[in-house]
Length: 76
Image (cartoon, rainbow, N blue to C red; front, side, top):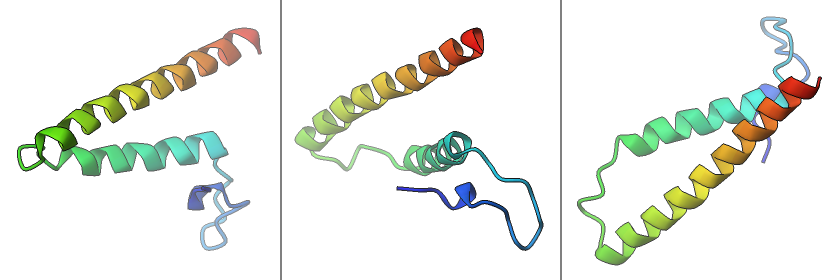
């Protein structure tokens, strides 16, 4: 998956390119905003349990990205 924002240059504005990491993080941020608009009250118990597991998995991945970025800031 590649976000639209990772194109070499916006040909309509001439804007500089966005680093793929930032483009994808922006897309994820937008998707999370969309998810937060939904309530889980209409989910079944099994769906809610699956959502909790997936949220936990995503939180771990977010922590990994954050820690890797902090490491890169410290070492470069």
